[in-house]
Every structure is written in structure tokens, then in C-alpha cells.
Image (cartoon, rainbow, N blue to C red; front, top):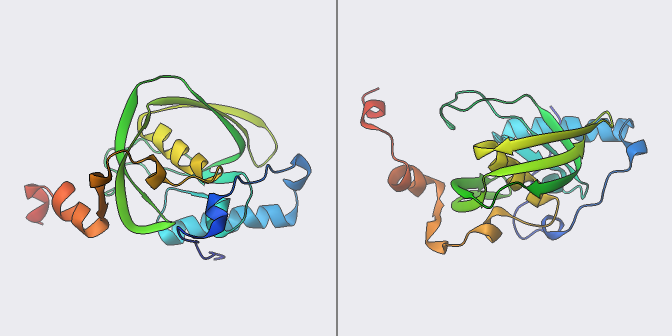
Length: 185
């Protein structure tokens, strides 16, 4: 494993607009190692996405992999590992949706964030192929959260009601407590 240290809120790299990745860099051993390090870090930290700036690399690279039907995210349709490089986002609706978000760079906290419900992301993958995804619902939120990291934003910047910020323990106790059926186990 080649997990790296995740930098936290307050570190200046998290507030920079990351640099675009030149196409000729994609096949280099250094870039391939960056992707491995990002993946290993995401897995060690228990995340579903991570952006290069979170490991102090100011490049427009993020990876996302949603697990299917797990305890933390419920009945979620999983996605394969996606590598998103130099993304451009387009909002396809003015309808917003809200989710409680957490972040590896803001450990121990959650906040309720409303974001557009449907987006389009144009990007290149690790092979330099142009890709496009239209994401809705939770996946749209995950993409927006990760892409924010590439442009110097954190989810806490998007919280409009600061009374909806909580520590993880209090979130589990008061906002999303276990259901009665879960307490019987």
C-alpha cells in the first residue's frame, strides 16, 4: 500500500485552483503512481472519492468509486472506479437536492449541503480518452464534492444553514440514529 497523508482544512493547497494535467503526463510512471497512491489512500481512509489536492498534489485529478449496497450508504447503485482528469462541469437543472456530506480533509464533521440534482461532466480518463457522464442524485453530489477540491472549495463552503453542521458522533446519535430493528442485533 502506498497511502499518503490526507491534508486537512487550513492547508493552503486545498484552497488553490489545481493545475490542469498535460496529456503527455498521463503515461508517465509518476502519474501512474499518483493514481495508485490516491486509490490506496481513499481505501485506507474509507472514502468513496479523493482528489489529488487532498494528498497535497495540486493537479486536476480525482477518483470516484461508489460501493453497492453497503451499511454506510444504503441501497446505492455502485459505480466502477472512475478517474476524472481536467473536468468541466455543466449544471443540467436548477433543482437542488441535499445530502449530509463528510470529507477526508475535514475529519470528524458532517454538514448538510444542497447541490444541483443533475450535472454533466466532460473529462479525460487516465488513458487520455475524452469521456462524458451525466450524473444524477447522490452520484451528482459525489462528483460535485470531488470536483470542488480541484477548484479550491470544500463542502463547508457550500453549507447555507450553519445549524446543520455536526460532529460524526452527534450525527449518528441525533440526525441519523440507528433504526429500532438495528438496535436488536
